[in-house]
Image (cartoon, rainbow, N blue to C red; front, side):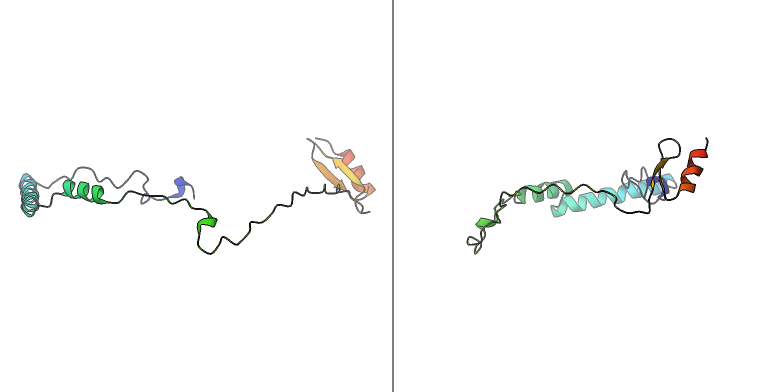
Amino acid sequence: MTMHMCGPALSLNGKKKGRFKYRNAAEAQKARELDQSWKELLKRQGVEAEAKKRRRALAAEPLVYNLTGATDRPGTAHIPSLGTGGGVAVLAPAKVYTGTKVKGIATMHKSNAVPVFSDEEAIDISKMRR
């Protein structure tokens, strides 16, 4: 599906909502106070969002890629790999039309190849002009 057929619900640049506009100054002040009290509560409990994310990231184990082959697996050492044999492929025979239906190939215009099945078709194609 191409992008011009998608509706406005599909967004490729995130879910940014932008600034929230309050109805009046009293609501904005109340929202700021609630946000400040929530941050103080988190600080009292010892849970700061950024510090928590940083601690979690530092405590995670680093990614380790184990690139082992099939011979390192237990119980597979006795399986031999498939030999290529060293053979060379034989050239396929050329494809040649051996039927009797098509009498030839005509060119209509601008190198458009058309099969000719009868003498009448050949005459018609030869009389065609641009």
